[in-house]
Image (cartoon, rainbow, N blue to C red; front, side, top):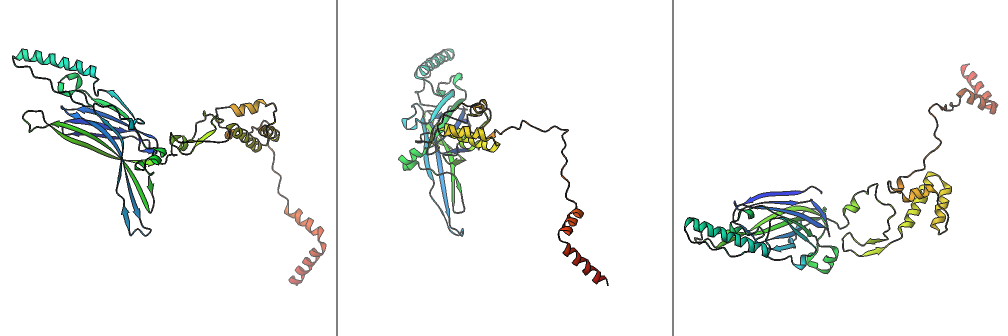
Length: 368
């Protein structure tokens, strides 16, 4: 589930792209980290990016003779358009441009001034007319049409796509998703679909101004887990974690926006755990003292109890009562010998003499 998925492809000698998804399984309500590394090979335009989740369901009868496949559901998780800020509907998702990418208005103005000076110098050197600058266009890869070499580099974008939470699904039925299921009667599968709308120059157009639009589509299967299948719940805690935490609330589900439910105090849990540890170790006096503390009576604690409660190096259930009176290696205590059979029979004969006489007479009669 933690292994990354990598897609490396080249599109029509125009664009080379790497898409990295950091994981193969994500719970409902979590975020999917996706990294885009885009290297232009020509004057290609990337007009945006979209991320979908596709859910497919199949139903089978008990005897596996009849099946029904529901229509696939396609839910848009993120949409980013070139030249525009991220819409408020995708505010729960994060998008960062690490390298390259679109230019700010100030950077675009400076780049066009540099391109104009270069074209003027080239025209005066060749005694030709100055070529006009292309019209500004929205491109996630930067202003490649200006012909400046410093823009011909890779663009790296990091995205954390928000999967709908249980609260979002309750408010909007169109966002309803079900966890992965593989059962004899129901199969539920999920895919991540990434769409990159692009355009390139039309080779048939003699003016070189028209462009042809395309869509690059990538589908990757992944496992959609239950909202409670978070790393905090499925992984064991480390020995350095605090056992007696101050939190007294639990959530109704594993989503980050789930409602909190008040629970019992963690101090009571620690005291009851201390009582159980003392009972197992056989220290009845310590257990009685802990029971008094649990009932609300105040009494001074010993240093051993304070160390058990406040020690954060090992969980409380790992502590056992140490034995301070260990035997030495030379203290070999011999095991008691088993009782002698002859002694046992002699004792029985002395206890029941009439049975012994009867047995002896029967033996003599059989010999005669």
